[in-house]
Length: 293
Image 1 (cartoon, rainbow, N blue to C red):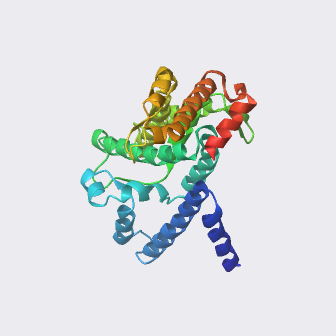
Image 2: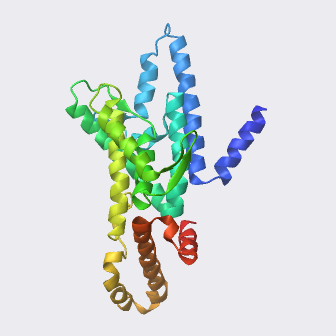
Image 3: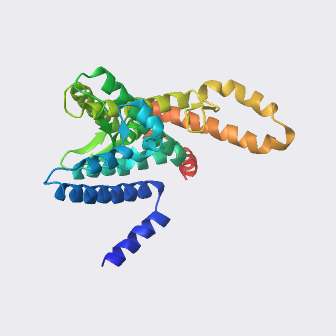
């Protein structure tokens, strides 16, 4: 039985989407973390030992900037660390939902950037919270994919606020209302002594997801993991022909197509913003689908 389960996991990692791999990795890390916690609790009279805490700190963001610079991998590893079952469950459910939406609307490359950059900005907001909230000290750490998932949620809500998702017992709910509820809850609880740093991290992720789409509509791709890039946006439409004319002869056909495709994508995103996904023509939907793959 266990061999078959392991084969299924390997298949999902090898053939699944990037989000399937993220979910599988989060589940594996969750199991490993809790095996370690059980061991170091059992061998320390029912209290997790300092050894376990040290292990957790080496893969989590710290409230101390220097620690995060000494162990720079924590900016990424903290995303995949979940200690509580429901923390993992809700993050993975929302990741599965909103990642598909963002992938469909603007493509997988953008959604991957939003996910990881949302986690990083969320981490920065967490560190800010440790400086301004009096109940935090140097022992504060942060982990989990919540900020990254929140970034995807707010990116999706900014692109297509009237896009509906179905909730059990509630029915269809527009993304804008889901995002609003999440925002209000984080604002309400951020200044209470109950996972305050986590709520600040969510706010950072929300800000990043919203900002990414706003700047993308202006022609700026905030792929700061590679460097900020400029693209043809709806506000740069007057310059498209000029850009094409100024290209070297050998690059004109390839770059002309790229610029026009980016321009067309920006027009479609602007149309979705104003009128919703249902306003797209069949040709526009086909173009959007092709760019999402």
